[in-house]
Amino acid sequence: MQDITIKITDRDGVTHEVVAPTDMAMNLMEVVRSYELAPEGTIGICGGMAMCASCQCYVLSDTELPEMSDDEEAMLSEAFDVKENSRLGCQIQMTPEMNGLEVELAPES
Image (cartoon, rainbow, N blue to C red; front, side, top):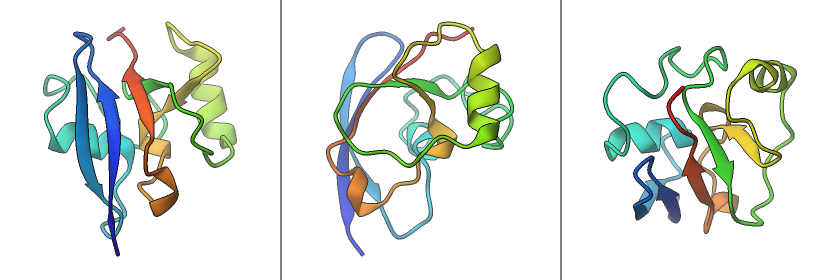
């Protein structure tokens, strides 16, 4: 059990260094919500089911992420402001391997 440090750049361009627990089965979207880095109701609208892309983010670090699921890939294919480094925050679990992860929240669509 250990906490990790990640950097999240919010939609206003402000970078926050936050501590995320790895023992609570949290994902990146839930970390963003718990630190209130996005206005209520603008992130994780579907509850983390990879069905809305409101938690889309751009991965800025070289952190090795798990393979994208078919659901995540399908959702991103329909989302706005998608880039090559886009991922859904709800699909990135907070594990010790995510230490040092740096992401930027995609614009609200």
